[in-house]
Amino acid sequence: MKESTRATVLQALKCQDKKEKAYKDREITELILAHPSYQTAQAIATYLPMEYEFNSYGLIDAAQADGKTVLIPKVTGPGQMVFLPYVSDQVVESYFGVLEPVGGQVVDKSRIDLIHVPGVAFNAKGYRIGHGGGYYDRYLANYMGATISTIYDFQRKEFKEEVHDIPVQEVICK
Image (cartoon, rainbow, N blue to C red; front, top):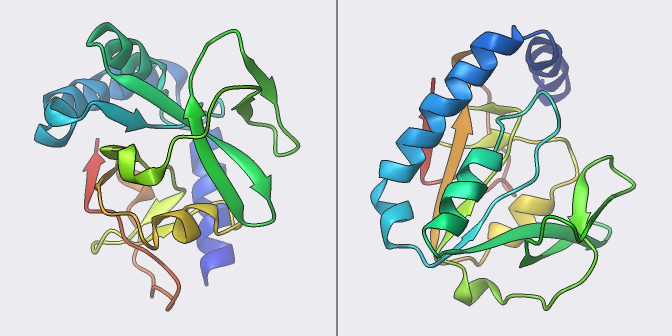
């Protein structure tokens, strides 16, 4: 079930109209910036997007302009990741095809106020289907801060969550 949902939604993501996607990305960014969890956060973890994902660069630029610390993930082993400070000229493409930081000090999850969690599909309860590695579910298992995800309307799907899945607290959808 999850595999077919993942494949269907990934195909839809890759076929989006670029102008419509850019418009939705701007709308979603404005909704995040107005969100109370963003407003009160000092340290925000997000991700550097693949071409078809929500373009988080607007969020990153705004957060840095607002004086917030922006963190991005780095895979450290099978199913394991950490967050490090984002410096635009200190990233490299990883084995998975995403940009990761090449240096910096790992930030303990207790110091992260808000995590912007990526995903391929989300159900009505905030459970997600990611790319299949389980990195975020493992990381969020004992995370106590705020979580938020951003999706396009066609990414909202119904599926049964599994015992190891961790829901996000809020999903912003356009």
